[in-house]
Length: 321
Image (cartoon, rainbow, N blue to C red):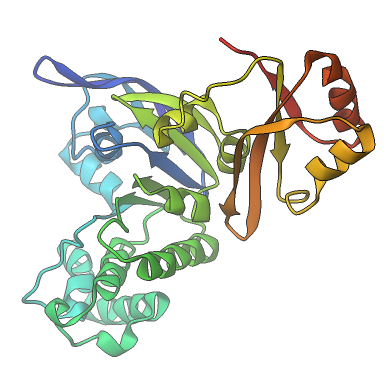
């Protein structure tokens, strides 16, 4: 669907994207997460060429974005809806008129516009706000208008640039649920740029972690959180876990075993003492998952490893640097 290969971007002498490579599949919800200044919004805007990139390739449905002429780029942007952090609505126009604007720009008939806007209002759940002005609406309602407007031209991809950053937690959840629903109903590919961990955990199937213009990691969201990967630890500031002497084993708790008493049962059955060095158990979508690092004497390590293998529990030994 979208193929990004060896992309480099510069502002003058400053490089803001460094050899970025990503493959985004049709119909998935793909997250790009990182701190402010990581380059994630810049990368997103290169996809629809709101930003130019100097080196590398971005293919959207086999079209090289930087080689498109003005007319070809205009047609490509019909396929790429976009929503922003601060909604970007026209305050003097009604909700209906804001959503109708892209349809008017592309010369659709009044009858089609009326029908299409009514469909979109119903889809995003604000049919009763049709004739109101944005200034009279809440932040969540404004973002629903922005989503409807972004979908007006039936795009294949929805680009979301920090779409929930200006919203409170409950409104964020409702907007994310709406985007999930749209993804399922329309089969639209969604690319979410965010610095919010909860956004990634709630709806993204795969993620890329960015820092300093580079992609540190790409993978299945659940797997990255489950393994508490190096890139994730760097993102959330848990890079330097000091491990004690002895053998340190990380035990992974996927959703199907997260609520079982593995640690206490293992200690009792093996009659081995160990300490918990680090732990992370948290909600992921509708489930709980995480990992624990346990420390034990070297002579007990093989017993613990064999026990975990026999129980079908995922583990890995963490070696002190």
